[in-house]
Image 1 (cartoon, one colour):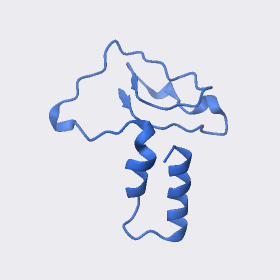
Image 2: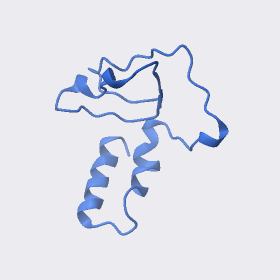
Image 3: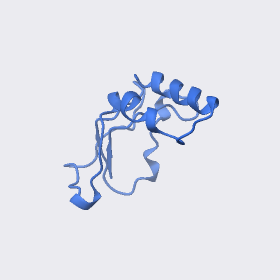
Length: 96
């Protein structure tokens, strides 16, 4: 599994639970992700990042760019005030 350019928040209220690797059946390569400082399961077990075939490649942004490059375009085209407030909060939380 290749996990790249994500922003992780604690799950269940504990900073060390942003990643739950118990479901992984193989090797994991973490690259360019942002984890809480207390996270302990963000450890690479892959020897090298997997090669991604051209047909499966997608546009990526570094995790530090997500707040400005991705969040403003998430959701529906015509956002409700509540949806926009949530997106603004997310963008601010991840550095947008």
